[in-house]
Structures are given as structure tokens and as C-alpha cells.
Length: 122
Image (tube, rainbow, N blue to C red; front, side, top):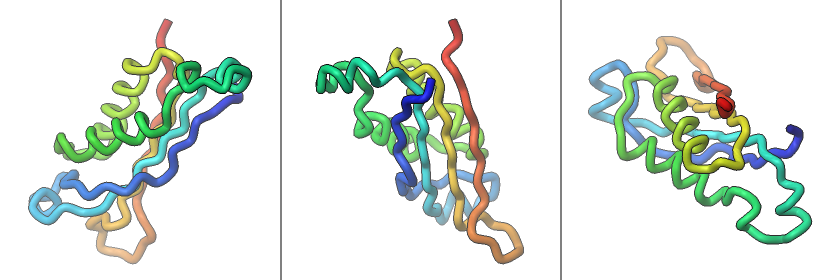
């Protein structure tokens, strides 16, 4: 499927991480979603009922990241992906990327990130 809905770099402040300091202090994360789905009907009808609202996708990312705590950003990404797939039957595949710019690594870096891709199972 070539059609995509992209929601790029949603900023959230959360307390994810393995270290106690990450839970205590928190830090900023950026979440990006790349959803694959057929947008032809939405394009022809100009009706939001035939697509997935990017506002709803962003809300899932924010709520998942701020209402639960994860030791691993891999687990956060998995929770976001599974929620989006279960809530929106139109999504065939989703890629979730989480950037962690303040990762507690003793070196100078722009960010650490993970990216997962999940697809709907028949």
C-alpha cells in the first residue's frame, strides 16, 4: 500500500527509561507515526469517515506516552502500534519511531531512537 498518513515528531514529556533518574526527572521524547492505508475513498469522497484522523493518532501517542510508564521505549512503541491497529481497522501497517534526545549515554549525540513496524494480522 503506497498511501500513508504521517504524524511527525509529536513532543511529549514523560518518565520512561531503565534508570531511576529517568523516572524521577523525566525527559522529552518525540514520537512519529507512519500509517499505511488505502486513502482512495477518502480522496474521492472528501469525507473524514473514510480515513483515520491524524488528531486521533496523535492523541493515542500522547496518552500512551504520558499515562503509562515504560522501562523501554521499545515497549512504548509497541503499545502505540497495537492501540492504533486495534482502534482503526483501516490501518494496514504502522511504523512507530521514538526519539530520545536526552538518553543517558556518556557521549555527545543528537538522540537515540528506535523504530518498529507492525502490520495487521488476518
